[in-house]
Amino acid sequence: MQDLKLFLPTPIENISLDGHNFYLKRDDLIHPDFSGNKARKLYYFLINDFPNISKIISYGSAQSNAMYSLSVLANIKGWEFEYIVDHIADFLRENPHGNYAKALANGMKLIVNNEYVSNNTQSHDNGILFIEEGGRQKEAGYGLETMAKEIIDWQITNNVQKLNIFLPSGTGTTALFLQKHCYLLNAEVKTIIHTTPCVGNSDYLKEQFFMLESDERLHPTILEPQKKWHFSKLYREHYKIWLKLHQQTGIEFDMLYDPIGWQVLLANMDKLDGEIMYIHQGGVLGNESMLPRYQRKYKDMV
Ligand SMILES: *Cc1c(COP(=O)(O)O)cnc(C)c1O
Image (tube, rainbow, N blue to C red):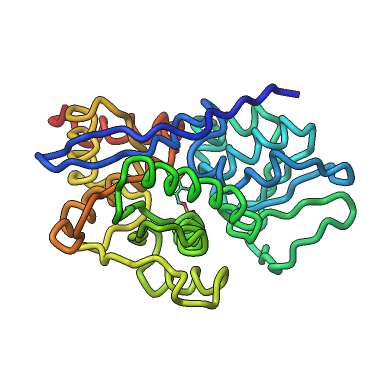
């Protein structure tokens, strides 16, 4: 079993980008292998004991950050880990790299099944713990409640009366639970969560919110992306802002969600009144497979 010390609460730093000042919540620093919002979403399973469980089953894409984080969780717990994908590219199968290679090294068993449909029922039967794609399930709320508390404590200590928080979404689980718990903690400060869809459009994201929470007052605010970007495709403007972030802040961001997040945030600055905090949700381990692709495609950019 691997030892796991989580670095919590995560620090909040000051950064500036193109002359705008932001607070940055460094959830990427939680742990080198188990970081960002996946550590928050899986926190419940990490800190509790499940003597009857011996295996995790989940599904999603063959390079996802969630898949890698689940392999780390399984490793720490001494559980088996089965992961279902609807397909895997020949190149990846023959040349494992990135999250896929690291998850295999942690003992993940990959199953290709293009007819697999999640039945949305989570059972602890037969010693199996079923985790929805990207950790989209109610237990994720537990770790995000602790993040909401960290932020609100910081707001009170620093007398930040009104805070706009921005984070890019995939399943929307992180943004939803963060908004819900900031609202329910009902502190003397105001905390508003803004997000943008990186996978699918705003309607899809809204549906995801409703799967977890029927009370719309607890949903985050959605900022519309200025362009239709396809998830995990390479775009010059994504690479450009990723490089700029690195140059101006010295911090490495993820290459899938953060380039979209920062472009949408910068385009909507006039709509946000008050202080702004960006959540660094980790995911930088996935850059190992993305960065060489960007470097090959945009050789002129450094
Ligand atoms: C998984 C992930 C997201 C998306 O999180 P959701 O809770 O699915 O919205 C965003 N950023 C990074 C870096 C991630 O790894």
